[in-house]
Image (cartoon, rainbow, N blue to C red):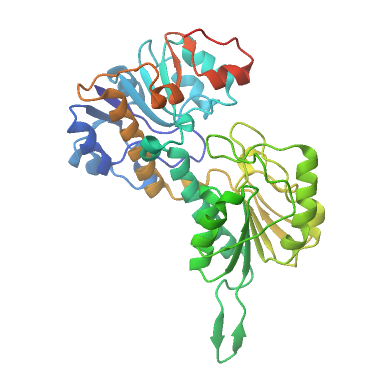
Length: 389
């Protein structure tokens, strides 16, 4: 099959959906890879490197859409609702689209893709099962987000992270508190520990205690109900307002004792829960830093401004948008690998797309086909009737 990769049009997006190192895995399987000219430059991948690894460079976006049967994109329509609208006219019935599509909230965009006759696979829907681990783009990007969040905090904090014993006296290590011990939170813990900070973390899923401790952080336990806190996909479940109120009360003291707080708590497709209130911020020391990794979902801190850095009550509150795009070289490499593995799984030995019924990866990731949004959870969340199998 012919795979097409185009330049990203979402504002500030520096990633690209295919990199030179991954192209041979596709060409060896008999596929052709076409990439729009300069699509990889913002991520650090030159046109000649793409060609040296077997990719072909085309001069225009329209040419890639015209020639390719499969389109790889970082942000397709849904995850790029404004600029992505112009791609609808370039997509044709039967064409395959693989990328981030925000399927759990961008319902009208999913309908538009379906009406265009596109067969779309949403990378956000990759099931968290063993055979799909190498396709799990959300985890790949969360790893980068957790890493980068700590570097942003270290840059803003008016203190050093590690303990130092110098001729000018001893310097105590910074204290970092990570809220949410998913992939991003664990990476934040590990990165902060490597930088020399004293690290603690909290998650409402007690099962992650060993994981937190394995990266050198202390697991903080609050006096809260612990039953049924994790869904079947491995994510923390959304809780009631009363639960979050009690949780905030327990958390206030811990937050006040730390120099840096990194929040990563998010529920797919929903607004992030408010875990850090303005009152908690007031209780933090002057110069403390909050990095809200959940800013794109509204943020875990009541004072977060998505996409901006603000100072409130002497505390710097960072609401970075698209953290993986701040490390575009390796973010693109990881994402390209995830997408290539998914595509090769879907095409099999004969190189042709095979939508095997009852396959957990196909069923979990396929958003629309044959003019219809087919993903059961998306249809349920959108309030559409259930499809008969």
